[in-house]
Image (tube, rainbow, N blue to C red):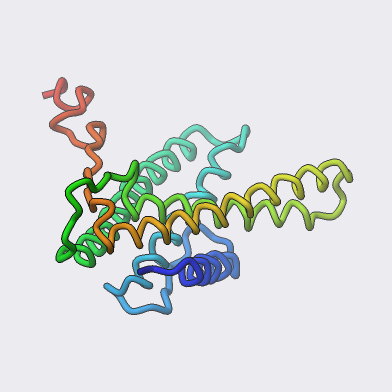
Length: 201
């Protein structure tokens, strides 16, 4: 099982590591071994953290159109890396539960364990940046109050989601739920299924 405490620790470390330089072009330097589940979690969160800041940059109303299009390409590529990392993490989970005897009446979860991790990684980023808003100086008291209220909700959501994540893993291990994964099939990333590409041939 991947414990909630481990996820929180890795995501927190990753986000803090990124913000040492706070630069989307910086190289990831993971403290975890490649191929380990810890390494997967750190890499996943790093991709999300860089993309978070790409999304900030592209919303600049004065961005040069050419720079904006180049940034959009980076976001597209980042989204694909994010999906690939989720699927690699689900492969890890498949390996963990491959020998489990599944109950005859086992249920299927609405999302795979790795997509829950995806949500938890994004949630860690929301919490980090909402905390920043509560600590800002030179803003109206109302801004800080609203940020604190939102932060309270995000922290509650995080607790609930981590609890559900551990329960899901317990159920998968016991066979109450079935480990079933549907791969993402993004037609727009495939030249053979995106009409903008194949109609040009």
